[in-house]
Length: 169
Ligand SMILES: [Fe+2]
Ligand SMILES: [Fe+2]
Image 1 (cartoon, rainbow, N blue to C red):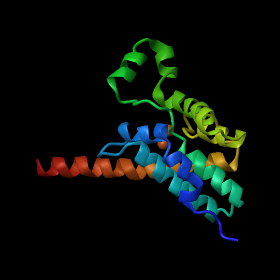
Image 2: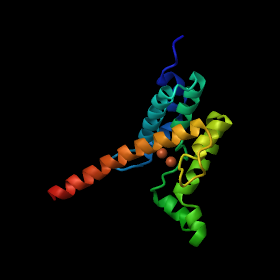
Image 3: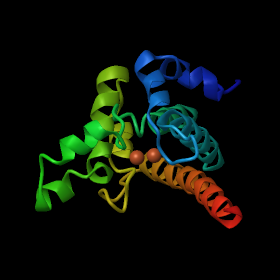
């Protein structure tokens, strides 16, 4: 039996207009967008899940969850988001910071648009661990690890570009 490839299991999400919108949202610097980051995290999760010998249906579930882990649908670096944050002050502002709220928000939105099972929803909601609750299933661990591996690579690239530019300035 041939196992489905990455594109076959994610095609409907990749081509959906709401997912395509993520191309417009900057993320980890150096031209990186939420779309680029999400696709890289999903590819990383896909390979990790195969390495961990997860069952084929769970490989697909975790790959789709990783693809949707940042499906919050706004630019967290925009003036609009800064204006939204100014409605809150003190502790309220802290608890409404993007880092804390976007996991559960992405899980609910992804469920509304694409339909998720409970393990996928939990995985997306907790991907910001340790800023989010402890990952409680194998899908949640794969998504949080894939996100961190990819984010570190992307921010490393941005840091390298900044340092190189300053060295030559
Ligand atoms: Fe995130
Ligand atoms: Fe992420």
